[in-house]
Image (cartoon, rainbow, N blue to C red):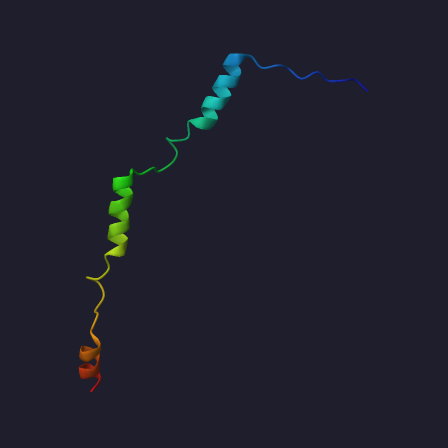
Length: 63
């Protein structure tokens, strides 16, 4: 059985391969902290969409 010797990479090939793996920011929808906070506030601020009543108002509506 013949032994196969692996082919060595040169420095430029290694750097190029690593750059391809590390340079994924173009493929990710990344947000800044301010954008994250704004999106979370939009999700969290649902009080305008919900008809909320106090217990007294509920009791009056049910009576």
